[in-house]
Image (tube, rainbow, N blue to C red; front, side):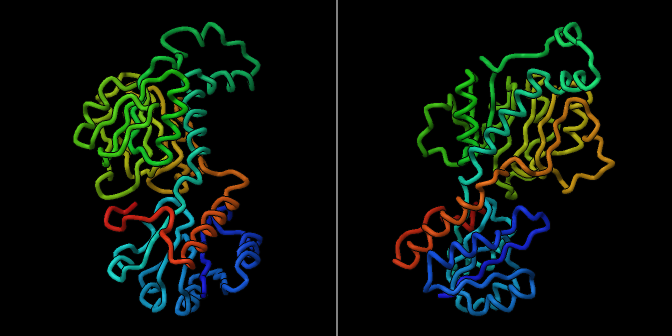
Length: 327
């Protein structure tokens, strides 16, 4: 069996380390692993590949992959894979969902606490050696998470871990998801379908975006949706920048409809140095790093290894992707 390993990415962290490829070779001595370091190498190697461990593939690669039977995405998102080319050939697609869920949920709550408790102001004052007790307590801020209402759009592995932690803080959690027949977790107070989005946003203090980037979620949150939130609500986006109308979000941050935002994803990455988001005092900007942690690749390779064992035995794989749905 031949496995192509191709994770070429501009950000070094998202490229599978050579040490992890060695782990695979040691665990599966009868499997040939070919690591491609650029698109040309991947295009050549995929002709003999039965399996691809990849962050991205092109339609041209899939066209030359005459033996390919299974693709495992090193990420949870699969929208950068040519699903429309893989699906007709019944090439199985799995992903790494769940690997980053806990880290990203911690990021969400960390960013929420930073803004709700106004750590952004206190840290700035600390650097200037200013005691701001009066300024900090003048008005509606800071506020406690206890009793606040959070709406999470997308109740996959990330959304569930966010909900679990928000519930522990005493928040009331509403989740919007497509599959309404699935059981509701005990730490979620209410489940709503996509058609109930306006009602789910009404009276919301914290809006968390954890949905996949698919046509149905493109610009899902615009000026009308933001206006439904409680004035001063906090928006947190760990999904994709395209889910939010960025101009509407900026306007709401400037006029006070949004009290703040924690943003790990943007329309264009890296975020343009001229973007006003860098300078707004009520915004936390991070460089698409909410899921980063040192042992990330250990778990990705462990998951892929478990699936490769299953694949060799002809068993069902974990994390199978619905190519029609896009996740």
